[in-house]
Image 1: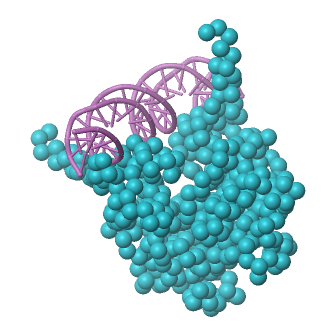
Image 2 (image 1 turned 45 degrees about the vertical axis):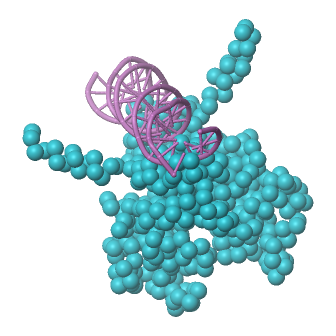
Length: 218
Length: 218
DNA sequence: TAGATTGTTAATCGATTAACAATC
DNA sequence: TAGATTGTTAATCGATTAACAATC
């Protein structure tokens, strides 16, 4: 069918990059942050690989999806590669994020100083508990979850961290999505059902612990 | 070389199971917990797969590494499979764990009610700050990190959660390992160097957020 | 019985690694 | 220049999927 090739050409253009590669980029970026911290100006795929326990070939291959950032014989300029990765991951800016749940975990997230240096800023905290609403956390007022619908769009928040009991997680995720949230970092030990176009990442310490106990064994 | 086959036979016996498979088992277990909660008595690889966004073939293949737990035409008995997975992951018991770092995150972990139902119990909390030592968190006394060397072995603790600033993470990891810790759940945004036989899992919310922002885009 | 679903084998797909020409 | 390291291609390895006989 002549003419139908255009969509194929488009496919070639937009070069599907494997999600597993994307998942490693923040790890590379974190390692480069460490190296910059340590005062290293230049590194190589070999050095980075030893540092992370990854093969140097894999690092070069991963980066090659986005262009050539190194120099033969020398390696990579730490600061340059760091900037490139920040651009690729879209953290060359500051993303406003919301926290839902003002329990111990919500407090920990609200006070965490590690977000701003890496592209994120907590700008809103919501809770369901009337006793908590109006409380101040790290300078922010805890708001009622009913205000999600108005606050999320008005602050152009696209990302939320969900730190609530498992029983209410799905329902609040629904509210967030309705309000325009496109990315959810879910701390509740439950699989969320979300529509296409909404990205969910899961953090469940017990999953990680159980992964380890398999090897720690009997 | 006759006689050297025995080691090969041993290889066949101990059937190396891919780590990526092990990593999915806790997810299956979590889903089964949900189903049990919902009162479902029986499920199938198809149902479980739709629930998790995984192919049914993959679930059957993963489980087949450990035996046959289902029944043709019927599927899996939720409670039976749940028990089997708990045995495989060695969470058919309660693992004592230590928390290092009594900041906001340490507090959140100490108060988290999700550990005990899934195989873990926090039994010790350590901190470096003299002001925090002696404080009570969820009924436990915060101890000085100097006591790691004596408390870890005396309570037979094999797993620690590291919730300290990035600057001291490696040094405290070393102390933990010296004291006998074999598994570390590291919340500091740094790659830990550890000897063979010590298992590390990483939780870094920023890594997950940056994974999402790649797709949320420009 | 007819329908459903397992456990497993073989086919496919994709990711990792090895190797090396290019070149700093 | 000699040595080192990139970016990329081809080879290898491993993981996922498709398919189906067995059987509940």
